[in-house]
Image (cartoon, rainbow over all chains, first blue to last red; front, top):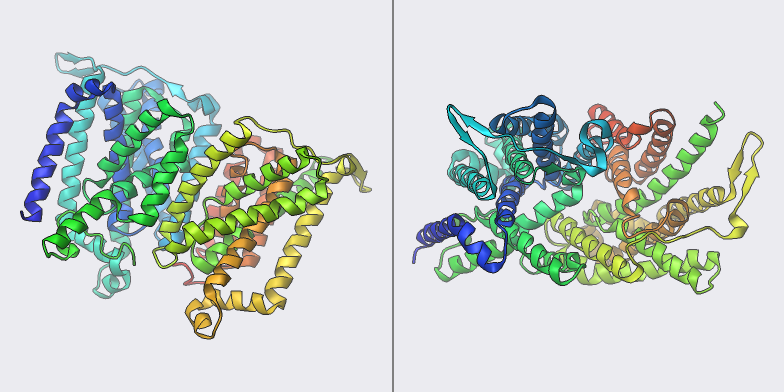
Length: 333
Length: 289
């Protein structure tokens, strides 16, 4: 079977499974809020995917942008009495402003220096949320009530399953956008920057402006994910912005397959379910998580999906550069 | 005013801690491009080993020597088995690997030594205060300052004055050429990593006596050390030292005058330095992009 067709069929199967998740999850003793978390984390991990998987720049501060989205929701609902939709918009805008602020510093650097700067600048937002006790509740975080949605005369009160479907719908939209992006000239330019930025510049393209747009896309993904996370758990706390959380998003992306469209979702699924199942068995579940991650980085750096796609492409006699969804060329360079 | 001088002194000592940790990070980063996110774990490990040694009746000076060396052994095992396979790859993979390693280490500490903070007090002979003429100052802090200055001086002499130091500095510029000239670069990488961990180990034991000991106590020194490297300029060891001292004093002064901004101050300093000099104070243009 042709790889592109296999990609479409498996994508369709995944989407159907996601739609049926509220029926499937309870049979495994899982609350639907856990699947909501999977979807939200996948969206956050997509920010790492845009920057690292496609553009080749290690965004290690995604949690700060995620947290900005979350605090945008909790602060606007608490202090401005913002509505459901408005609070999410404010969250995304806040994340975009944060991205713009740090991009001024980030754009001048590449490689591991870029990664180090994203960690350092991300921590600023963490400490601001941690220290502004009177506003954010500091270490204890802040709880708030979910505003109802008023559509004309229609009054919708959200419960867990409808929050899941809302999150899923937004996730699938952003995923579609992402897929379109990877097929567009813009996406190809990002991959070209990853492979050889000097050549991109020599072709007359201002690679900085492409990186800036990629950063803003990443910021929007992370911010939207954070906003949806806040509105689903009705709680925000400073550790959401910490670099350890950024590391977890990075872990999900690399585990699932950086540079693949579905990789972040697969990684988030393994991460969240792994945590859920392991933490009932042992309190030291992070040892296993860290161990899996170490094995992944050493053994299959393309991640699960990247490895599978490369193997399938090899069997079909296609070079993996031409494989759909995966352009991991240069990932091990 | 009478608080200002002790504050600056405390800041200098804190800065020396940051500098020693940052030097270890810098050494490893410069030679192999590895951002060692597990550096804090080695700090904590050294603290715990020293704690265990003291518990079994070892004198403090012995723990101060032995604990860092044992930590180096663990570090070298980690380098040989986990980090070495990644040297040919994009440096970001070693950053990811050390992140995983830090997760494992933190949980392991929790399993072995418990989740609660452990009491780690300096020996009685280093307790008390000494009159410096203009103020009374804790002896243990002066002892720490002395050890850290010796460590920094010894490292400088080692890198500037020995054949090995020369090879190390040359390998940072062009490791392929050094390999071609007959140096075993794999061994060089391992020893370099070991030196970085040794610095972390010494700082770890001393900081446990000053800042306390719990499964993630090393983290308190990791982020400031990263900021030192950024402010000082990646690739420059002198920069790491200068960055450390600068940050230590700035943190001490903001803690004195604006306590709420004590953590944020170093990031503000970083933003200011990077706006004026994107490569950092002593960084060379072109190194690490």
